[in-house]
Image (cartoon, rainbow, N blue to C red):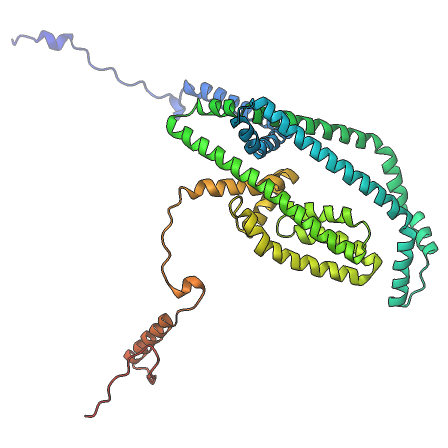
Amino acid sequence: MAPTDKTDQNVTPPSAPPAAPAGGSVGPVRMPRWLPRAMVLALALYACFQLGSWAFHQLIGLLINILIAFFLALAIEPAVGRMASRGMRRGLATFLVFLAVVVTAAGFVFLLGSMLAGQIIEMVEDFPKYLDSVINWINRSFQTELSRVEVQESLLRSDWLRKYVQNSASGVLDVSATVLGGLFKVLTILLFSFYFAADGPRLRRAVCSVLPPAKQAEVLRAWEIAVDKTGGYLYSRGLMALISGVAHYVLLESLGVPYAPALAVWVGLVSQFIPTIGTYLAGALPMLIGFTEDPWYAVWVLGFVLIYQQFENYVLQPKLTAKTVDIHPAVAFGSVIAGTALLGAVGALIAIPAVATLQAFLGAYVKRYDVTDDPRVHGHRSRVGGGQALARLRAVLRKDGAAVPAQPGPDTARAPDDKS
């Protein structure tokens, strides 16, 4: 009898897998351990997103005011830096610049407001005379029989005037709240812009302290470009507004159009801070006032607006903005539209300096090459290419057996005659 192997007796056979329950049903499946944590993380991220979105919508007004203050600080940075480089404390220099800006703006608003108030009173007093002149012109032109009394009675009895008076009486508190809110916004903008300008070096150091050395140089370069472009834009636009206002004042005063000073200020401001079409929008009001005096005055104003727009676009603007805000008029107009769509009037004001800053900053990273001396670069069509293409077409047609007579052209060589 063969001896038994003890190792074989001690080894237990592997256990068989448990049999599946009857009916093919599977037992309970345990939830993965990562799933609860993933669900909690997703809910937390969603809650943070909703909280951030709510906070952003609540603080959008403050963020816009800070953006305006930042661009205002960039605009006065050259003057503050020049005074600080001569030994004056930066806070005092910022205060003096702000005092000059506030005094100038307040004086301008006061003079313009007093002038407009006086001229509005005169306009209201002379309104019956203007209405009579318009009615007489309508009667002469269209053979009607209108009278000022009938027009006034129809206006006084109209429903829209009654509703307008009721809404105006109930909206006095809303107007007061709007005025107070506007004053608070102005004070907020001035306060932030003062801190941005006075603590400009400290702010730049704070931004650069969280960046590596290679990025610090780029941030400082972008900051310097933004200062140059923003300040140059405001200064050049202010000078062009002054020139435009003086030119239109001379025209309106020579024609005898009333309210010439106020209309000239209106044209100067609107025409310069709304590019490309600002001159035409600004010229609509002087045309309307001139039309009430004499229809030919409106024609003279329109002609002067068209001529001055061309003079400004091709002579004045290139000389004043060649070194400050050198961007294409179409790009400027598109940037204003985009800024208005994003931030309203604020976006329209800061769109051009922002785009000019971006264009100047990206220009250093775009490699440029010499342009080839080709007539097509200057807008001329090349006849050589057309002749070659025609010769190739004729060769293909002859090869296919098409009966196309070959006519000599300026770009094809004339074959010698076959005498055989």
